Image (cartoon, rainbow, N blue to C red; front, side):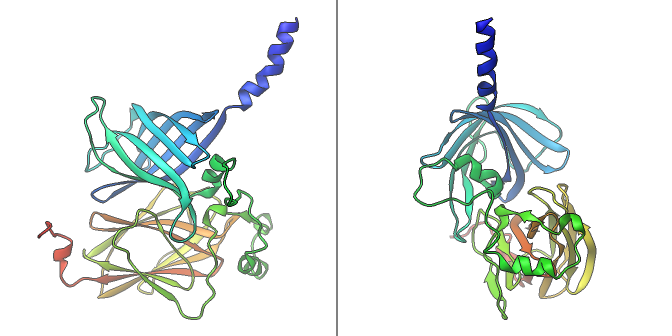
Length: 335
């Protein structure tokens, strides 16, 4: 009788000590391929276990059993995929085996918190396969992993104060949003200082960047393009909350009032002139501010990841400058 009571008393503590978490991010492989990557993990006293899922096309994925640790003092997540659980048609140009990763939670060049790091991969015989990187930028998901870390600097809260984001409040007041989303909650993983300038900031592509570029109103992202077309994937890689966008290409509407979902919308556009312009317009902010669209642009096989974030009525601009000499794209590395 007493033993049964003690077991029933201890059971809730045993259950709640296991914290279930999901992280959504990107897996980049040396050679140019970029895939969606998700961790579904359970943590027990700093040790994690669960599964890792990789996919490029929805429905064609590979899932592996994984184990690892969380070092909150040093803000490091380490894990290793142990075995393949299933493969429903996932394929890649490079051979990707079981992944071994050590990811660091730190600020990037734009002062945003990211969880990222290099990876190696090996087959079951421990033969080396592809190398690359993994990046998680959704602080709504990553911050709780390290919120108990001993750090002198306060990390981004999963419930940030909305006071500092005045531009978003003003826009919300002046729009006719349905009653159910008039008071949106914050989207902490996407908050970046709003840009209120009269002249756009021009940013040319960097030679190498493992993290998605973030662009908003007042900024123009420029790429020197080598191929004759651009392939585009656009979707909502965070919590699907009803973000709606319209997209223009060289001033012409490609699609209007499109609601972003988890499945990627695919486009392939020809480069019609020397400089071509893609515009992402925020129609609403869904239930969470701001409006965010995850985008991957392909210059041949070379991917460029972007997050476009805006308040209602604002837009992000991307320009493609066609290279007249395509030898760079097909360069076989000369001395």
